[in-house]
Length: 377
Image 1: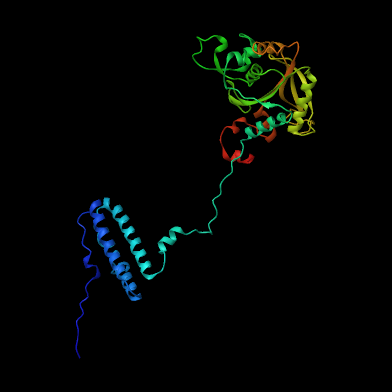
Image 2: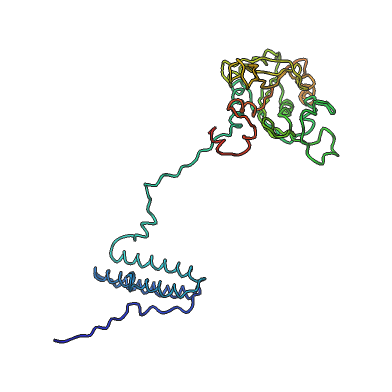
């Protein structure tokens, strides 16, 4: 019997120790290994060779990549471990791809995993936006008057004293100015009184701007933001919204005003709502009236919200004062108060929204609390 001695030579004897770990050294070392892997894969022929290639490069104990991981990663300084790991992962992907190509198995498991779509996962829910309750209420009010043939008017929030006060029959020194709690732009003292800038206290300036830009007939509804120096509490805010309306034509009477507002309140709050008018005062209308509606909570029977009266005050209105037409006639002579007449009205949007949705504090509209706002989506 003859005996043969077999000397096992380690497969990874050609993997040198790294002495430098800079970018150039790592690029060179891994490029050399990739070149060797491609050359070895090109020489693979048959199933046995495929298995030998797998063991040589990916074997758990004596595979070259295992040797690289154990020898180079352990010896690498901390600052070089990240770059070395990136090179290692790239080389491993290349070797797996070469193995799959040699075996004719198509894309690697890593490639398939990267492209996989887990259909058992819940789909991504794309939230749909919704109108803020103030915007929603404002649009609903506007749409009621739009159905009556009113167009929508807009204007600047920073106004002159002339358009905000003087043209609306608030002459300088008029006591009604004090009720507006005006926020005035700073450093306006050198300007004439009528040219001084302020934050509009009502949307009425748009009425004058509209009359100056077009002759009668005019039917316009004006939604917008206004500002007053009010202390914030449960029912007041320095920023709020109004909807005002203006109708000018020949033979417009107070009966037209009453019929328009009665229809609008029924369209907005329901056909069972009643309206009633009480004398009031506004500088830009004469005669003027406050409008009350029957309580929408108790049906007019009396409850805590209507203070047991069965009625809720909601808006102001009146026939346009001839003095307002006189200002408009400076640019549009057709606004002759002897030939035309008109009415105007205005209401607070937040007040109506609070009534409609049962909200007790106006500040909730502006707090940005999504838990509150989502109730109206």
